[in-house]
Image (tube, rainbow, N blue to C red; front, side, top):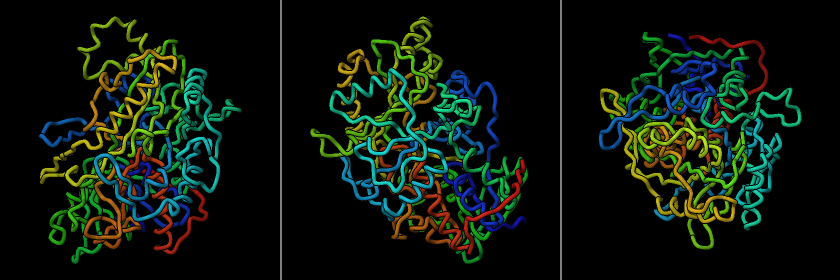
Length: 530
């Protein structure tokens, strides 16, 4: 048995960030990742391989509430889901941390305020080199520092779109982007501003993901060990059931055991819940940390839609994800409840239109798909879904994962879509031509699209209605923490990655205090084991 000060399970936005924050302390840290390093290869940037052939999607099979199998869009690599995310690094709005009234019910308050998390948002933006412009977004919360990098400029067609929005009375803003772009010094820029960013791996490490800015900096410290190909299967506890005393993992087909003073889960909302539920024992018959019966419940992933509008003129934009619109985030003159966020999504490419439903596209001449792609302007619409107890992850004794989900807040989702649609005639686009882009893609929303998964292990002050306390430590186990998006009591309507990173840093400071260390200095190189 190998003994460590801290074991972190999962290397994505939560786990990778935490490993970097703890690394300078000198404490022995083991980072367990079930996947390996994502290969750097030409296929990284080929839409056919990424979106049609699902080259980088896991081979997991999960089941929906009706027992139908599906392939979840999860990615097991060093860096986790951030390896293929769109790097839209938004802060939640300050109001998202309080109780919000929605069309279908109430979004609960967080146990911490925005002001408590704000310093860590600032640190996360600095660590992940976020580009943005303060003061443009009317819903933007207060910040203690400017963005560390200037906003990514709009290309001409998107600048025209921004100008058209402004002329129509809206307040478009430069979206916060986590890309390693130096527009004024491109010879030294890691990012080449290509179209293969959102949803693709980056072959040149030009994206601010958790491998590049979390795991790799952590491994510069000799006290950090990364073990890849390590799928954690169970957590054991002491006789009283008050602390985790063993981490069991399948490492390339062999069972290995590890111990640590502190164990931190960062497996993603579904897999963190799965691991806790599978780790049941006599003291915790319904799963670890599940005395409240809340583990796996309150699953959220946003009411989202990827849609494309057909521009009357061609849209030659390469890097499209630079614009956002939050005018309807908290409602509008016609609606006294929140509608959500509108932002750009990666530029359509014709291979993306060939997916699970080839019968809808195979009869169309290839040139028509090319033409659609050339004229498309692509939007991502997000409406907050509510944390409903019946929306949950469950696991049977054979390890079969069931994700039961019933949509909520469908009316605001439709109204946000209609608001965008009503703008088209004023935006140099074809009126009444707004298409759901996912109608042509490999997996349909909702159940398989788990990129924004959250909930399942909410944190809170009341042990009867939450899994974790305000420090994200399990109410029932003294040394078990969680730092992924499963801790979210609500999800807001913007991308969750930056909030997971910021909260991980906040919990990291608590852990440093607990172990009597500080994130100061260390030199040398960590160890990687495969």
